[in-house]
Length: 317
Image (cartoon, rainbow, N blue to C red; front, side, top):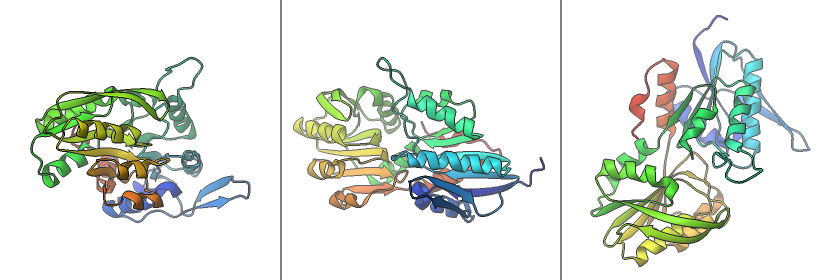
């Protein structure tokens, strides 16, 4: 196949707001596509311009509902059938990533299944940000560019947070590696929260490992779902005489009563990215939420990948 070295960006409905900003940062227009909806809930994406011979970047976070994942798969299939040269799935938030292992009998490994489906659909490459588990990269048989939000969060901390007695906290044992990396770069102590769950999304007992007295604590996590963990951790740290507690998380799922929990908590600030759009309920705690855009980050990575340049300098951690 002759390659005309054309790059085109398209977006699923769930991430169109972000895709427009990525395309703007890159310096091109977002490609034209449309979706026909059927009365029973089925839908059919299609491209309204030629993609033959082009390298197509399809931008879609696969947050709930599962329609966002299905829409991405159908767009990948449509691009393949329309003779695109290469198809890259840009998934700022990779959904189903919490199902990365078989942690009880007779359960699925959803992250592996999603990886297999994406490859079967015809994707040639995947780009994503802060996977819930690093090993998910190994579930794919195509290249995966796993980028870290630390390239956004670290400069924000250094430029916008003039905090003395800083400490970085992990909300659970699984986040210890992430928190330790931030703490090493910022030259500050690390605090670990140990929690047990009564059931999914319900935190049972929690204890804090480390001295928080007199510290300005930043809790680092890859996602906020129900906000139960970070709000409970924040309250516990304030009870142990922390000066202040803030939270930084890449993916803002904010399900259920998460916004209200954040508002009622002692958290002074919650810094997130725009991998997932905030819903209208965020007005409840809008004064506490600060959103950092990942558009420039992804535009830069796409440019380097398209031009066969190294992206190693984007991996701060």
